[in-house]
Amino acid sequence: MTGYRTDEGYIAGFGNHVATEAMAGALPIGRNSPQRPPFGLYAEQVSGTAFTAPRHENRRSWLYRMRPTAEHPAYRPYPGAMRFVRDSGATPLAPNRLRWDPIVATGAPVDLIDGMTTMLVNRPPEDLEGVALHVYAAGRDMTDRVFVDADGELLFIPQDGRLELRTELGRLIVAPGQIALVPRGIRFRALLPDGAARGYVAENHGALFRLPDLGPIGANGLANPRDFETPVAWFEDRDTPTQVVQKFMGSLWTMTLDHSPLDVVAWHGNLAPWRYDLSRFNTINTVSFDHPDPSIFTVLTSPSDVPGRANADFVIFPPRWTVAEDTFRPPWFHRNVMSEAMGLITGAYDAKAEGFQPGGLSLHNLMAGHGPDLASWQGASNAELKPQRIGGTMAFMLESCWPYHPTDFALAHSQLDYDAVWGDFPKAVLPR
Ligand SMILES: O=C(O)Cc1cc(O)ccc1O
Ligand SMILES: [Fe+2]
Image (cartoon, rainbow, N blue to C red; front, side, top):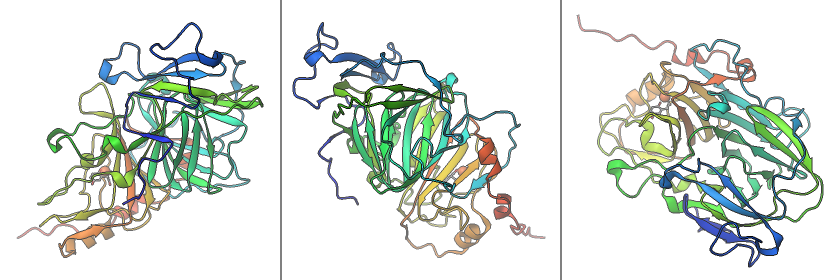
């Protein structure tokens, strides 16, 4: 249980239309684009869906800013962040299961941008489909620069150390065990309140993450909308050079402004950053028998054009009771048509006795045979089936209908013999 209520500085609810101003009177009343907005502010619309998207899916916000975003020089290639890259796509994708230890930071501390390492990608950003999974290891604040991702929304999954995300639409503090989302195209700086931070970022090129339908679960459960928190308007009035680094079509680009673009004094709309505490997830599971499909643990989904087949599902494996009778309780052996990337925020994962560490990563692409490792299988096959609390753990899965390509860096840094965790299973003994 976490103790916080909706903090001062945040507004409760998922995908709501909100109106917020950091200075009284900055928000035009009754219209979006008056002839002269208050205080000489510039009105700017940012859309997250096409203008003509159905109303229930339509997402956009109106920003009232000190200078228009349009006023900027040409972008040039950004020479840093060499591991924050699009897949070369050159190597044929082998059907191998892969796993990674936490990627260690080397050399002098870097900020979030230069501390990003792209591990898995599955569609080119220009397809407006697919997801990428990056890991970050940062030891410096972003002071005089901002980042903006034109390729997709960014879902931050901190694993160690908090992030303070100062965005155009407000400030968010996000700790391990919480997640935060920055919409496509929204500029932000990341500060490190704990001096260093590590974690994962899911970059979603496709349909915006939303809460899944609940079907027979009913009107409540899983991630409840009111537990999502959107920041109130906040701005900085800084006339000092600010470097903008933009990710666009898989590459990084940069230009420098003579001011901070985090100068949005007021905004309204339903395209906004948010944070969510994973301990608020209302976990649902069997109270009779069998291990249900992991879709019961879906926090967020990004649908594809095929009904029921996600471009990306963000799924967690939270602390929970396990009570199933006459059941092999951990994940079963399986081969999926969906592709599964997994990370571990804390603790241990019930299908892997060892080798899957917090900060690590695993990949089981479509049709890869996987499931419990030998030690987990032996343990769970012989366990006394009393109610058991699986505590102190938080793993996640970014499941996608598009197979993942590890980047060249990821391929060069995977664990050497992951296949061995499924070695030496005893053969079944048939009656004669
Ligand atoms: O492979 C995994 O560990 C993820 C997973 C968990 C589960 O409970 C059922 C299916 C599944 O793919
Ligand atoms: Fe799986």
